[in-house]
Amino acid sequence: MRLFLFSCFFFTLNTAVLASETTHWGYDEDVSPEHWGSLSEQFKTCETGKNQTPINIAQTYKSTTKHKLDIQYKASPNDIIFNGHTVQINTKNDDHHDYIEIDHEKFFLKQFHFHTPSENEIYGKQYPLEMHFVHVNNKGELAVLAVMFNIGQENSELNTLWKNVPEKENEDKIFSQNINIEKFIPKNHGYYRFSGSLTTPPCSEGLIWIILKQPLTLSNQQLDIFKTRLSHHHNQRPIQPLNGRIVIEQ
Ligand SMILES: [Zn+2]
Image (tube, rainbow, N blue to C red; front, side, top):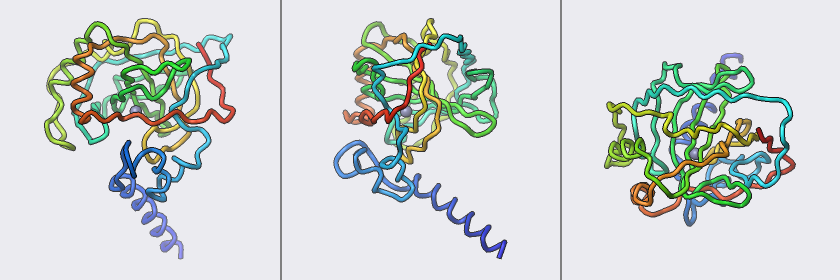
């Protein structure tokens, strides 16, 4: 009986993983964000979740105690992929050099990727590009650091990334060139913090979201390269209700 239960559990777990990998979802028509929750049993949280991301940051609670955010990125990209939804750069799996530290807890960088236009908004402002750095701690909890981009001067490191995006969808390309990830982090580390979710299926909740206040810039041409890779479709989920959540400003 025990064994039976165990194998059932294992089966369910596997099915869940397979569903999120194989169920087709997107940003338009019958697979758009409004439909995610009904595309698969595993995507239900996209519809029923109460702590979903993105949000519009319009009201904040200014924290009186200092919670320092320490960002330590030493640049160790492993591979780059266009997965049909975004351009994603994965870090070396066993590499614990790149991390952020929040409240004395380290979250290690797993991957970073892009959205156009921005998913989160700050006082109703939508930015042309938003970059997401996805981290995990030793307990398997996730934290996402977001950086906004305005149109302006080009970002040199972005050129290196765009040059390396594989032609084919879902083709993994090993990243051999050095990049300086710190060029994707503004000097000022003031931030907004809230509890949220993945912005893509399965929309799992319980993530720490940190949005840096100071935006960076990219050129119009650099934005066009990314948009062309997305075949001129956007990859931004609409704003989700706050449902009483508080945004902390630091
Ligand atoms: Zn994202």
